[in-house]
Every structure is written in C-alpha cells, then in structure tokens.
Length: 95
Image (cartoon, rainbow, N blue to C red; front, side):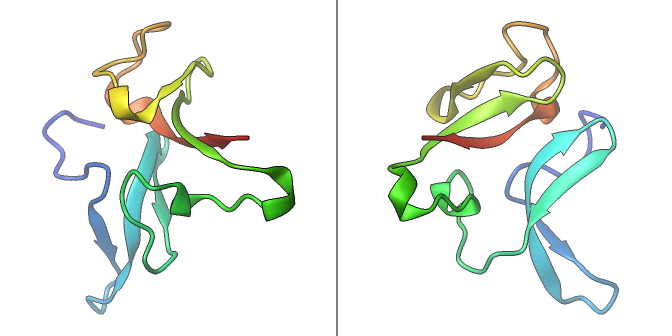
C-alpha cells in the first residue's frame, strides 16, 4: 500500500451501492481487513470475540510479516523487529 493511500485504520468501506459494509481493521501485503460488526469501534476489543470462559482479552497489535506483538496504545510507525510499515500491523487479541 502506498503511503498516499486514503485507506487507513478505521476507514469506512462501502459497496457499489454506497452502503457501508464495515471499517478497515488491518492490512497485509494483499490488501486490508474489514470488520463488519456493527458498533465495533476502531482500537476496540469489540473487533474480536473471546468467550467469557476464557477470561479477559487484551487488545494488541501484531505484525503480519514477522509476528511481533505490542501494546495497541503504542502503535509504532513500523514494526520494531522487522521494520515492516505500519500498514502491516493489525489488531490482535490475547488472553
């Protein structure tokens, strides 16, 4: 993805009829991931479902290139392990 792309985390995505189908929640080398869950806010654990019997889920970021994981509140401009661009980081939850 180009740095000049208007598509960023949280960008609304629409179908050909102009109806919103979801928001961008992550990127990889093939494109972007969209969540279609209503009410799922950007940078929210609501993007992922963890059954209550598994405990609390922690929202993190993860690099699609090397698998590095970090705190979502400190989303880096690039992966600190492999220098992949920010567009290769996506939402990740862990118990």
